[in-house]
Image (tube, rainbow over all chains, first blue to last red; front, side, top):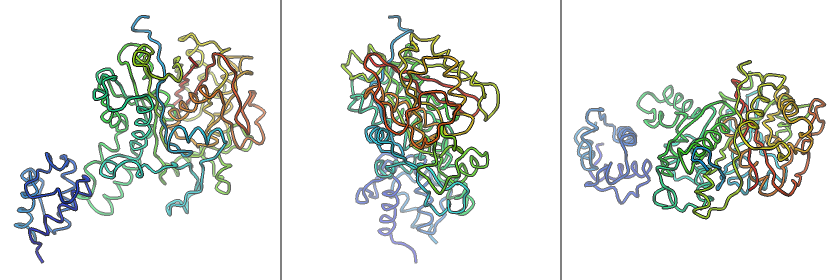
Length: 82
Length: 420
């Protein structure tokens, strides 16, 4: 069953917390991974791989650069999840 | 004094070792003659011919926050812990620049490792085979590169005068400290954080060293396995950890009112050009390094009252070092209290020169030579005064200590420290 927007944000928050140590409540739709959440380009690869597994979605490398904010990633996953 | 021949002093020390998680607990256990060697309880060790090692006393995961730790190889984690302890011990309250008494452009970092991020390399290869391409960590390369501990320490402390990683197997840590002394002496930096780290307790290095017949297989008596100078020694015991010191020009240290532990008198370096793993058996290569130390500094053999020997507990190496000391210092060796602290810590490879420099400095400060444990039957070829069983008091007055480190490849590094 496909995840809801709320479930995706919650999942991304847990992933970002695990990788960057940011409190889950700080991971909001308008937050930038790089500027707000201490996720550098290498850690972003980890976030993407973890999100792919969790939400059963493929995020090709060329699409990763468009995922600037939590909202971008959430929208992408909503649209592409299996 | 000319800027290219400045006096260098030690103003901070830090260590994380099999005997203790900081310099103070490390020293306390050393003086008490405690062994850090234990039977390996990990599942992977069960079937190995060598099942003993000296593992770190305080796991770095208890100190470094997880998001930072997962991007650092274990060797870099050790280095960071020891470097931050040394930096704080030197009286700095924040990274260079934020603490105005350290100008980042005048701060260097020289941290060495003999093997580098070997556990990261091997673990990530396991991930590749078992879980596939996508799961290999994007942090793998910056974790496994041998300069990673130095680079991470440099970033953490704000060292912009230069960050370096000399690699010379088991002499690496000492070579790093020697390099740092030169950086200050020649005017490239005023403060340099320097030392060695190693984290190689993993089945592959253990099996590989074991197959070289270099390691003790005394699994039945872990605490008695590392026995330098004893007739029954059968190889070294692998240890892990890091030792880091803060070196500073005397002028800079005095200007900011820093506590000075000792003078870093200088170094002697040579190479055997003999064999890739065997020491030159007559000790000539090591003697050349000792002679270079005397020729390049004002150190007098009469001042040297303590030697923290390389002495790894291998049959050939322990004797070659003693022969070299005799060759260069003659009868002066008789007043040198010789300690083989690897009897307690195991052999930290590239980390050895780091923790043993910390031990040498604390030996001068406390005027105490740590004991050599497990020395029941002194090898008759060891014609020197080894501190056996219990720690020994060192004399009053101006005294100096040597720290010897030698590495596969025939690298010989001798460091000298002296009371102020």
